[in-house]
Length: 318
Length: 280
Image (cartoon, rainbow over all chains, first blue to last red; front, side, top):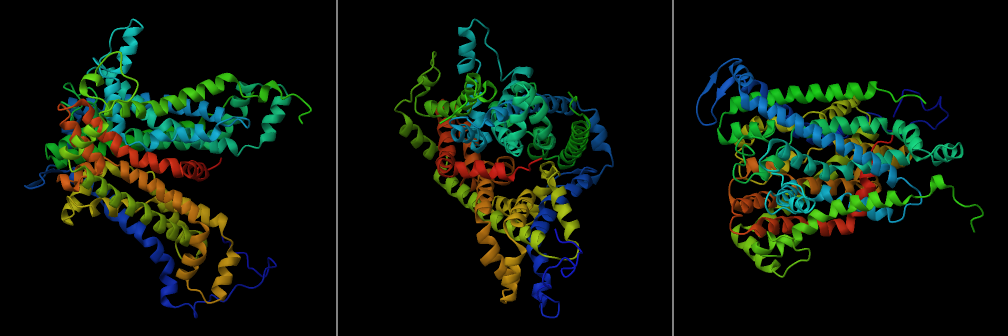
């Protein structure tokens, strides 16, 4: 970064002739011009809609009809709406089921991938990125089939082992697990690569010294790898909170008969899907915006809480 | 020749390979299964024990996919959207990253902090007003409704700034300035070529994300001719009582272009994701 230390004092040659007099108007505005596209697009399609959500939420807003100011009615309606609480519960449940295993699997795999003598390292790394390049839509269709109650591969294996068939699509917990499996499948490899990158920044010598001192793999992992990974773990916890609470495509696609509510008893309808249902199938824009505000509060609160917890909790010194 | 035997602590254990192989299998099997169902008829697809080798029905099902929805058109739409977003992000993020890394201007640090903070804003939940804006612009059911919002990428700016800061010395830029190059020429002829590999990976990630995007195209696109492949898959699924393999076949066809691309550029994507990660 540039600082205010003058070049001559630092023993460098004097600054090149870029004085304002020689720079034309275009040169002065150039840096602003280079960053303008981002700010304009973000303002129009990100920030303004976000602020506008808070405004629309105060209206009974029909896209082709009236906009009637109703104050906080949408919010009080939301608090008394069992469908909202159901969607909120589903969202948190699916988010927990998908985030916790994903980060743990990624942690273990990154540790394995970090071994210097690992053969086929490039193959393993590339393979783990395959789910990431597969679309959520395709993933949802193939997983819904594999987890099908009657003809699914998984239930066939379960029945071979003597278990009852599990109705993943129609039961509450089953559908949450199914969605969580899809989310975990998609992200564990990507997350493992992020962790691996941080692990590789740890000097080899530290591990070698620990090995000389008799520390085995598990202790090396706990006392060297884990502390080195703290910043990236915080980063992935916060991003998977922001992303995980907005899950939409998987619940929309796993129940063909009742896509907008994810099953007859709304067993896996998430908040984003509820928002979509109210906004774009019932055309209640005001109510949908209120759901958006509630989701916003949840995301900020949980991401903030996670950030707070994951930066406060320190590993036990050993 | 090795003079000492490797310590047991630094040998790769068999269970490490077993776990990694299991993970690799878990990553690849769903795609293989998708291919199997996409090549068999309904009777075989629901047969138990399941078929584990592909059948010969692939072209029949692919033909059905193409006749049920305008699939070729949707692939073209996806290529246009994802291609424009990929190239656009690579150039725009490099440009903004260059300004933040190498130029001095009033408000620079505050503006950069703002860019970083926007990454944490969950803008997807503002989808109702976003739709209103697209509607006011008369962009409903058009591809620019997908392309223009997709061009802004805060992470990309952050990432390109990192690369430009570390890959390009101030001296080379100053030398160019002394030789009379304008800011734009300095960027386009000196800075951009030096960070082209990083910009390429960023463009690839933008391409993949745009190709796979679902919610926003699903809300904005109305007519089948404007569908991207993901929305076409959804349309196939609605009609999948005709044939169980149909949606699978469509999913496979929609994933295939990315798999082929991945075979060629996967290594660079892996390296890019790992270099882009911040190293604590």
